[in-house]
Each structure stands twice: as C-alpha cells, then as structure tokens.
Image (cartoon, rainbow, N blue to C red; front, side, top):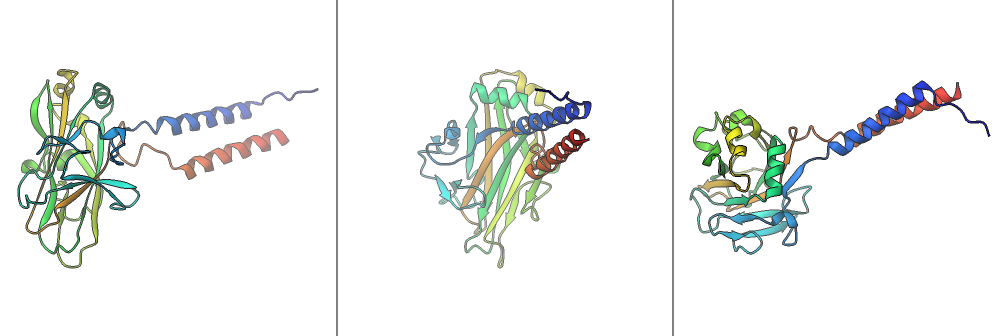
Length: 263
C-alpha cells in the first residue's frame, strides 16, 4: 500500500491547528474565586458576610437568587435590609485558601459582576465603595477606595454594562422613575498594577483577605447581587477566543490542506 508523504504545507497547517487548540485551552485559565451557585457550590467556601461573620451559606442576610442576573443561573443576594443608608452594607469577604493565594499571585486581574434590581425604588443610590485587602505584607488597606475614586477605581479598573452613573470608575447606580428593572456591570481590576502589589504578595503566604464594602441609601433597593469573582492573566473579555473565530481559522487551514493534497 503506497503512502503519500506529508507535505510542507500540511505540516504547517497541522502545527497551526495545534496552536489554535492550545490557545483555546490556555485561554480558559481563569481561576474562579466565587461563582455563587447555591449552597453546594464549592467556591462558596471562605466567603462570609463580614458584618455578621457568618458564611454566606448560613447567613440570614445572604441568599441565592434564581434568574436575578441574565446568563447566571443563580446570583448571590447580599441584603442590607434594616441597615438602609449605613456604610458597609453589604460587606462580602473572602478568606483566601493557600491555593487561592497561589492563584492570586500567579494572575493579574480580578473580575466581578455587581448588580442591583431596581424594584419600585425611584430614589437613592447603590455602590461598591471600597475593595479592601488584608495580608501579612500590607495589613488592611483599601486597594480601591470611594474616598479616592479617581486614583484607585478610575486608574486600575474598567467596566462594562450599566456604567453611566459610575463615579470616577467606582461602580454606582442611581434610582429614579423609568430606570431599567436591573442595573448590572462587570468590573475588571488590574490589581498587579497597584503600587503596593509586591508587598501584598510578599507577606505571609498563608494569609490574604479581600472585602467588598457596599454603600447605599436614599431609598435605594436593599439587595445587591454578586456573580463570578474570578482571577485571570488578561483583562475581562480578552482571554477567551471566540469559538466562531477559531472554527473559521481552523476550517480555512483544513481547506488549504485538502487543496494541497489534491494538487
């Protein structure tokens, strides 16, 4: 049985296809810190309501809501009921495991989705005011601070979605008559660029804590939704190639192989 030698073009095409596959696999290197998909979700471990100290799976102010935010089966609902107008509500905190610390040190970007259902509210505001860290190398500090939003939120973050009322990059929603039923935005934080990043990761390797501090009042809704807190090497939306683009490129290369073999 006669075999046909593999041509130079065929080798190049196969190599390119292999690169495409490897790119697709490596592009999915995001590390999920919290997907918040119910009480049995393993990524819920370590997350607490900082105000009560209770795990989000057994806290009276924390629950999992179905259909709250499009594209997410469930969302974590942190309620500030009874604390309207009080700073720090809700306050969602993660005590990192050693594996999560290693992932934090190996990546550069933190992404999360923050949403608020408007309900019948026609006044007030809801915002994520601070994103704070606590580690052996830095102690407690506000990496992103509403008190200095332009130099923190505005410098180190980008956002997509309902960003029209953001203040110098700080996630913020205002409520008034005629607003949409849901405000939602996805925020990406380039934490590896903050001035004290080296100190943050150089401290006690067994201790790292992160806290989202909310702020709302003026009649705003008391519920804030959180989805997909994750780490990645690149900004949100740029790490994962579109399947259609991969398919088109792969198909073109395969066509080139077929044409070459026919010749």
